[in-house]
Image 1 (cartoon, rainbow, N blue to C red):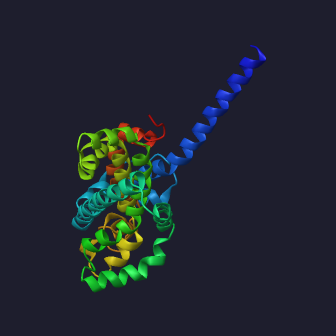
Image 2: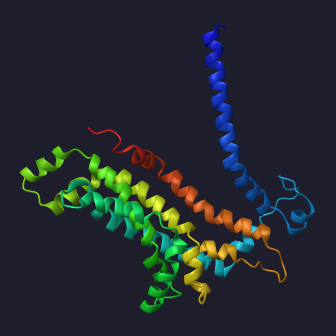
Image 3: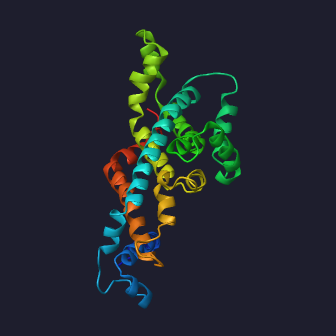
Length: 282
């Protein structure tokens, strides 16, 4: 082998080793969680094996037959789905204005939207708590639907702005010549062209809302029936009194993660298209 070939082999070997390290770093906690969820309580505290001796799905049965957990799963679907729809609806209008229209202060407003995504949730929790109580929606799913756009909407608007900005202006000019109104241009021409971006942004906002814990915990303290799955998993008490339900908590965490994995697998092509849309102007 020549020196150039040896260098090429070493580079490829180093690349694959790096990929394996990153994959192991990302997957080992997930594999360990699956392993733990398949163990009995005695085996869990009796050994530290990665592969269970007697794997059992009893923990999953206990989780899936828990009425409170299944109720929280339904709450998460409502809250995360509603938050994603609200963020996409309002965010697409804002992104169209920021990406396509010309008005004074647009750049300042764009940076203000970005700045809103930088505030930690805990810094606005007390104010949102008072607002929710004053509106009379404390302890309901509406409280989270009211609060979550605080961090999903700026993110959606900021991401979608780049996609709207990257669309060819000739399309819009041709529609104006044909007599289309601004609303028609937005709804019938520009919005369909940003479907990959909408899918990507919607899925990301859905995941953020699905995994949110701080607001969900604070707003459902007095009404456990309105809890979402992160709170339900954290407070899972098991089916036996005085039990340490670590294996069941792991099973619940896997159940909560599966819908997100399924969504990513279903929309993976749209996600890939959305991540690259707007990067090259036609």
